[in-house]
Length: 265
Image (cartoon, rainbow, N blue to C red; front, side, top):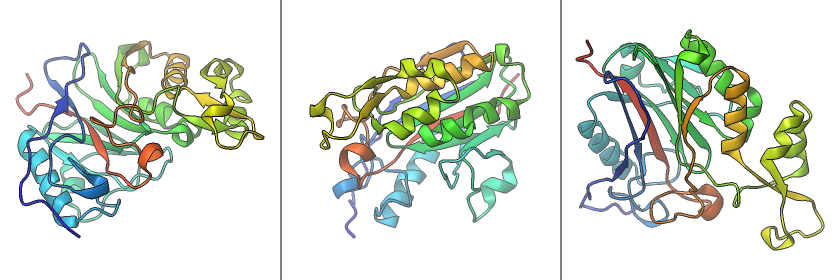
């Protein structure tokens, strides 16, 4: 598989949220990088059919640009949470989990997405950070609640930032997905609107536009976490900046990252 000999500088989004000075965070885009064809740009996913050398170069460049070393997960659309350590970073096997918590400076929680919702967390004292991969399956399984619990901090002392995910006008789901949420929490019905026939190729089946941001926000609110920021992106609609699995099927992955600085006070 072809790879570019030139690596363009990647472009990041810097989350706008009131985190302590000891905490750093970043969101990658598809802009820059060495990948070509369907993964063209700054693809960080090693499991999406991209040239391994391109992924290696992209990840190496990311590591050079960050003050902390990313620890990659093997994500499964579940609700497992892992606590990061230097031993995990040095391991040849990525831990199987969909969220990571870290209390050690110099390590970065890293979540990869291409439509699912990435959520970054930190406490108001800058002592613990976390990142979660929250697609609809993970939301149902409780990945956000598990992440907050693993941080061992009162929810009212936590901040959350929602990174780029598929927007509420582009995420089409079937009746079973809607029912799975609404049967558990009837108030989640506000996160779904019936899709117009033009939004779905099968006009005989009832389909809904789902708002991942709303569903995630409601889950955090129910858990007592109310300081939530971000949530105004759409990966499906913004092809220049974001990879989107729903839009392109074969595509790359972006990373949402958070860390505690080594020189914290």
